[in-house]
Image (tube, rainbow over all chains, first blue to last red; front, side):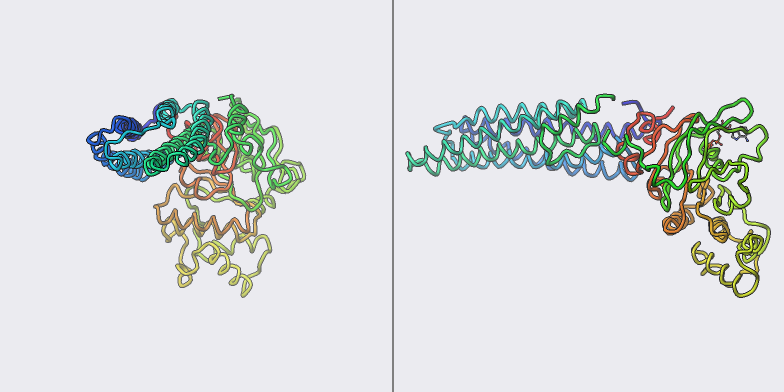
Length: 234
Length: 264
Ligand SMILES: Nc1ncnc2c1ncn2[C@@H]1O[C@H](COP(=O)(O)OP(=O)(O)OP(=O)(O)O)[C@@H](O)[C@H]1O
Ligand SMILES: [Mg+2]
């Protein structure tokens, strides 16, 4: 991306971007930490995760304000407009992911230091969703629609594991009625991870919008790929 | 990019003005290098691009304002409603009643407000003096959004109005001869934001009746008033698309660089 003639404009865009990066990092840290608290039954860690979510919320408000200012002062168009618009969407998803990390930490507190007796593939789901978030952030950084499409595509894996998990859990609860409430808490957490995955997908969709101007929400990943492959001129 | 932007935004069937392979020289200097585009009836089309890219030159081709310029020569064709406006039998005076023009600097005649409107219709026999003319004058001033401001001073000179009022007077004068097309070359560049907003609202009204082509250096204005936008660079048409496409997701890097202010 070449520079604007107005350096102030570039500086404001860069500041906005820096805040976004910080938010990506913090959200990822909080999700990881919430899951660590779960596996280790560390209530103090869960509490600090809940505390750290306030910083994520504050960043969202800051990004909103920066975007508002940027629109008023510079009246961005074309890719600049798409970037600012997408930034507003992305921070909303990041903020929601932050809330979901805090909600995992809440569940950990409710489990009162008990660690999951059966892991029901939670470590795998956690690894996948953290990888996805990292991949989405890279796609965002590089404004790379192909990497973003791959993120959208891979969300299916998380969904599939989650669905399989739920079936296994039902059987498990039927066989071990005494573990029902424990299992419900674990099932809740699995559901939360699956939802974090959906928010990561939203971020990836906005990356494609920034890079190419395509509105790909509610579009099948295969169709998105066709769309991107049909235009490798730029 | 997306399907819409690579195709022509205005099909030749929809085009009221068809410009095809237009090349233009001032002496040895070729300033338009084969421009082709269709302009849609009762829509607003904006021409944008850096200074000297040929926007005004192209606009003036549509009512043959370049004819008077020494050493100006052109190739290609400009069709208005299917007829070639450069054909030998075309009456240029008649053509200019069909294709009116509003300039950057408001240029009312040094006559009364009333006479500014009545002058051309009288010459063209559109209305005689008397009630018919009074009605025509009032009607044009109404449609130009100026009636309320001038109805009590129709006999005062047009040049005594404010810049924005003068520009609306010029628009009223242009529509008085019932043109089909109105060409506007930076019509607001000498006006303050309020006067500009009034002209923009007027453009929005007028497009129900007229086909409008506007040259502007104000990107927000192009985005606000036009349905289609054409971006020119050094005498070439670089990109032509729906205005919303141009300002949200232009197809060409040059368009993007220009409208985002990365040009240079
Ligand atoms: N009467 C003329 N004689 C010779 N050259 C001319 C004449 N009018 C314009 N030109 C040249 O033709 C080119 C296009 O000029 P034109 O006025 O059409 O540009 P423009 O896009 O309208 O620019 P601006 O935004 O500054 O009004 C320029 O290089 C200009 O110098
Ligand atoms: Mg000009």
